[in-house]
Amino acid sequence: MQETLKALPLTINGHLPLNKAMVTCGGVSKKEIDPRTMESKLVKGLYFAGEIIAGCGRRGGYNLQQAFSTGYVAGDSDL
Image (cartoon, rainbow, N blue to C red; front, side, top):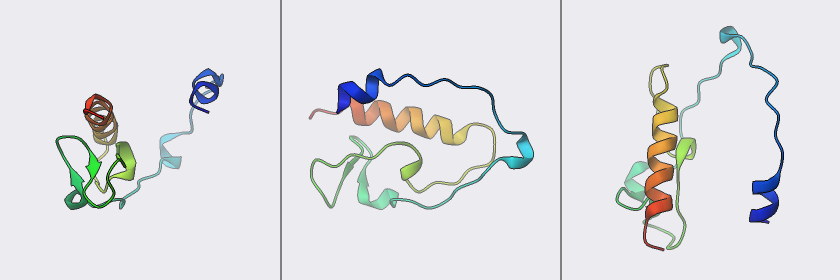
C-alpha cells in the first residue's frame, strides 16, 4: 500500500482564493504525545504528525512548520 500511495501521481491545478481559506483547531492533545518521538503515550507504536495534533496559530505557515517539524521527528524516531 505504501508503494502504491508513493507512486500515485497528483497534479496541482491551482488554489482557492484567500477568502475561501479554512482554519482548523483541535486534534490529539499534546499531553498525550511524547515530544521526543511523537509517539502516543496511550498506544505504543502509534505516531502523530502535522495537523492531527491539537494546535491553532495565526495565519502565516505555523501549521506547515508544525507539519514539517513533527513529521521529521516522527520519521526520525527509533522504531
